[in-house]
Amino acid sequence: MNRTFVLVTALAAGIATLPMAAQTAAPAAPAASQSVEPQAIPAKIAIIAFEQVVFATNEGQKTVAEVQKKYDPKKAALDQLGAQIDALRKQEQALPATTTDAERAKLLRDIDTKEKQAQLDGNEAQEAYGSDLNEAMGKVAQKVGAVAVKYAQDHGFTMVVNSGVQQGQSQFLWWQPSTDISQAVVNAYNTSSGVAAPAPSAPRPAASRPAAPAPKK
Image (cartoon, rainbow, N blue to C red; front, side, top):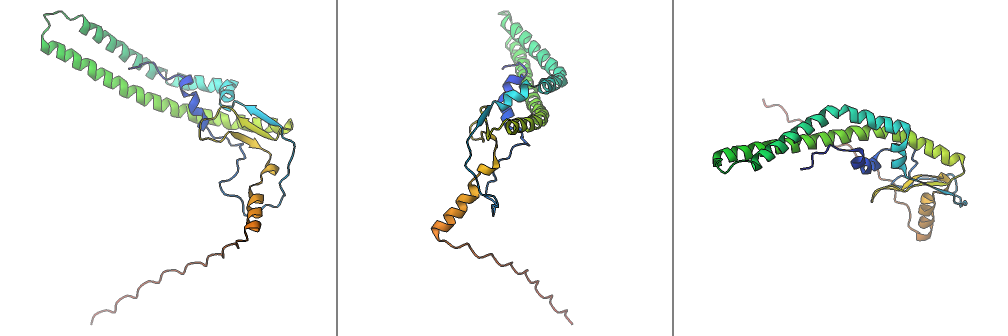
């Protein structure tokens, strides 16, 4: 098994799930109405490797170091357990030919027990470390996202595209709201299709409670 403790580079991919409070993503369903007509404007697109940026900031590096320091004792314990396993393996390989089957079996059981413990402890430590790092870096990402959006607005960009997203995730960090044509397309299609809007559903009457049976005389 690999007893090397989790490194930040192994978790960098997971940072793509961090929240971006400054993102102005379009809702899953278009709004019921749109008071402002969308506009076609000259596009000026900015590219950002957002996850790498979050880690590269001074606060990001400081946050990573703090989380790593928190898990240094666990890392030391895993390293010590790994050293014990290596020592037992060497001991097993150096057993003389006169070693009984029972002695060899006991040593192998000890190795197996420690390996399973190391696997369990390592998995738990990795999961906890990843969760703590994600939570801590998520707070940094929210602030970095706000700065990225302000920078884009101040410098006349109409869209910010994240170049470091994973498959299945939105790569748009921010865009000019006036260019969103979602509701305008809904309106245009409704006009061209000729299909009338469905009538609003009437409120369902409350279920009547059955009458209580008359008391027996």
